[in-house]
Length: 467
Ligand code: ADP
Ligand code: ASP
Ligand code: MG
Image 1 (spheres, protein in one colour):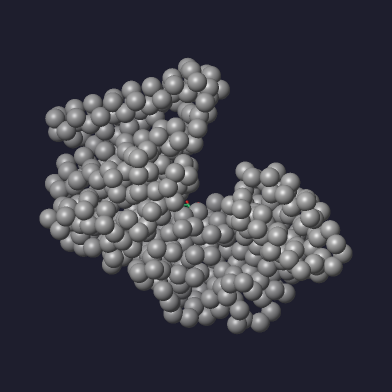
Image 2 (image 1 turned 120 degrees about the vertical axis):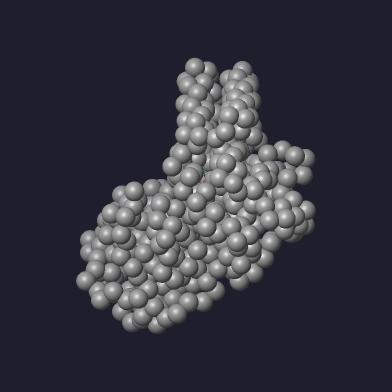
């Protein structure tokens, strides 16, 4: 069997849903399990609706809801279903709209929006999309069955970024998904959503549908995990920053994991690890160009003959310099310092040390004040916000001479705040001011990709073919 995940743009309207169904149909002999995100922008709208209700503006919150409901109704009518199916789905949309309206009023009245309530609201985005996609598939003659993610993806209670209880997943999949696949039907499940053991809805963090797909693929020992999105595959850089970027045909798990972690949004950072655990190839494919070959991510890949395969950027980074109170790096200082991050569950991305101080980066300001307060007990701490990590990735980076000098020459007068190479075989990362990040990527893209004789691993992106 295979897992096919469709992102928001791949189900965003009637034509996109129809394309998705055609893609599913073309793979139906491979026993697909479908995972869908909410339609593009729906999750953002639901989050905005919650915040607007929290501010007390009932009317504005209701307007956001009406607009969202209208978008789903438009898709429904565009799908041209048989009358009975259309009526059922219209009723379902009306029911979800009513439930969301109730939540909104509750938030306005209580002036409280806990992560728990927010998750309960946000999960409707995926449920609505899956309802439409399942109906569209059935109308096309596919025997599609909606599987409720809340019955499959058990998680802990960290609402907003819940962690799946992975040991329970294979059994849940055997119970809820395998029989559907075995009977020749096509299960369609909502990505991103889960539930606690008490049945409270949770979500896996933004972009989490990729993670759902990868977890299900691993639990069901799928042959392949397909991520259907709005670009041809993993590109040499985000096309919004470097429009002339190329598609990469093949990536190793290690390369893809680094790119996803360091900001290549096309893959959620947690996608690769479940695939690695079962050696399952992941393919990134363009739902608007289903015939194109996409990017294949596999345990190992052929030598590309290039040092750098892609450049990623992670924004919203905070750099912190931590200097031990005593002049020399006292024994135990690093341990005490990392204990603080560990206890407060703040992940550290890059680290570089000198004799008396440590520079490190974190990607969230959520608990920064607490971190600083605790570190201040035994060190001097400075914090610089609005930074970005730029990350060059390639299996052959290490073995290619002069990379660092080419990078820093290409950057010219862009100020580099911190550098890290070494921890991972496949990446070279450095920190710049957020405002310089795009410029840095463009300069590096020119240095490493422009004017080169195109190695087989890259493929130009055919922009005209994209509708
Ligand atoms: P989906 O809704 O299908 O999950 P996302 O918006 O999450 O899609 O991811 C696709 C987007 O990722 C692309 O449109 C692109 O802007 C962005 N992206 C960032 N870096 C890269 C990269 N290196 N290659 C491809 N896409 C990238
Ligand atoms: N709909 C969710 C989001 O926008 C999950 C996803 O798209 O993967 O974050
Ligand atoms: Mg995504």
